[in-house]
Image (cartoon, rainbow, N blue to C red; front, side, top):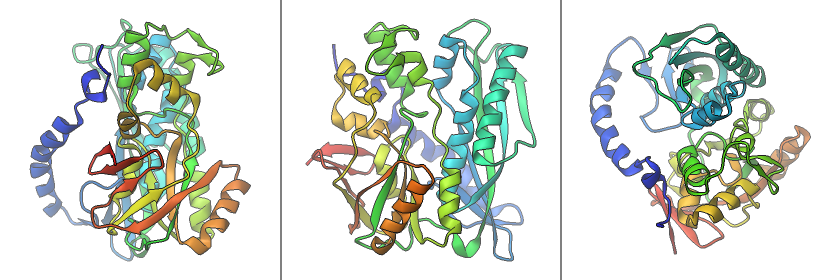
Length: 358
């Protein structure tokens, strides 16, 4: 049996990039419309619109993805709302913005009261952790459109988040200098990326059911995969308010640590101190025979968010994160590199949207 990849499991990122170009050719033209102008190009974690008087409106949008199918398999819906909040607010943080509110969109096969109540519970908990409100949203009953893995329980969940940032404090990595330190904040596990590949390996190839108890995980595989995405708002906002100079932030989602290369400065990174990832990643890799290249491109591998700070401020940042109860560690440093490569200690180098062996 061939090695499973994200593409063979059904997520063709190369084809997606090509298709996206056609979409953006039209959507990009809308930037000339309206009263206000965006301050950032497409492709960053979030965007910012200049409202005048040094006030920027930060915007992000994202969904939960096929993690929702795991929720359906378990018939458990009270945590995916946390994921929806997390995927949006963590992206918004990356421009230096303070998240304020989020609108949710829920499409359902059937409007089941118990299921919607459980989804609402998760949205509430995510909003509490992120210190935002949910002042509105939309629900759509689209039986002909939505199909899941449990009859009557098919649904999709997405959101759009808004925040504010002073225009002169937007952070997109423009001030990164060689020698700046990369600090990694621990993830809670697989978060909300790569679930298509994880489901292929665990449920199809290995034949697991969601209630299979895995000793090295200390719980069932379904419980592990549903572990909510960590929300980093509290600690990041605390650091920003403390006056610490954060030169870049990266939400580590699909493309893994290659997300560090999305910054404006022409830098790459030498990461030489990656902590051991959680057991879910080694289990997934061993069961599926997945290459290191694929693992590091698809998954966060234990690091959910990164900060780039000036070397003299690294110890201060780490001490502050420890005081906030956040597990964080220095991963490496920025280096001058117009090709924006990311070097890993296991012999991989990332360039573009892929890792390869040196």
